[in-house]
Image (cartoon, rainbow, N blue to C red):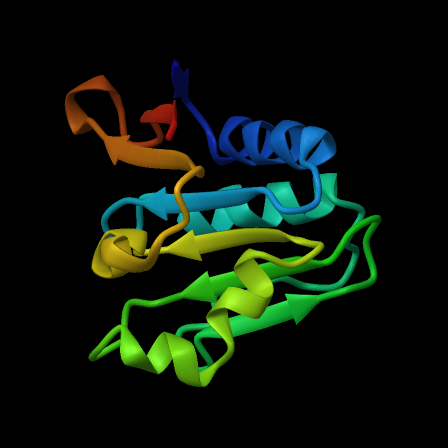
Length: 141
């Protein structure tokens, strides 16, 4: 499925909509260049899960846990991962196969340990269509 958005609010709303429908055990991967809107999307998803606290990218902690929503939310940013073994050290499988919703930014860096089933969300810019334009591709695996 391909969705086009033309503002941060529309990108946030898409995340919110997916968050409202998300179920325990669901894994989302989030792929896109720096500054493409991954954090905006993630904030919407978290709000859709009922999380009111501020959401930021866990670039230096690898995973941020939010457990105040209707189901736990595990937000990963693996941009700084040097080796997939680091994911074992933080208990990656406990989160991914747990009772919450996981979202993994830069998941292409850890493809070999992704679960069999996940939803990939790819966000791309196209400046010819405008500064705020985003092409968001959602693909089930």
